[in-house]
Length: 72
Image (cartoon, rainbow, N blue to C red; front, side, top):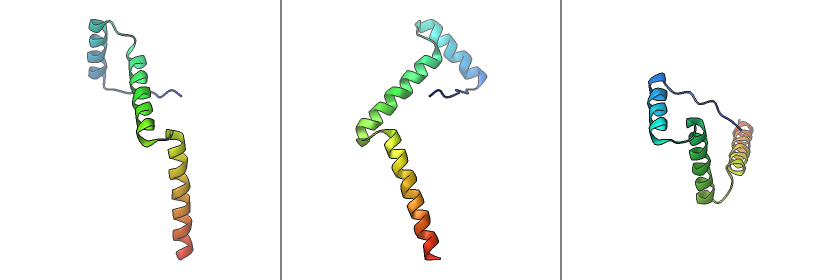
């Protein structure tokens, strides 16, 4: 899944100059790699995938909402 990256113009210019200076791959590729590594580390930290965690939170929210509605 791709996300649109939106940064201020001046920041993008600075990042572009840094990329050119360091000879690194495209900025978007670097950001995607960094986000991917971050998510993998978080999955290891919490012991489950982000998708499973998201589904569990969504189910809990629905159950909590239903519980609150049944009280009234």
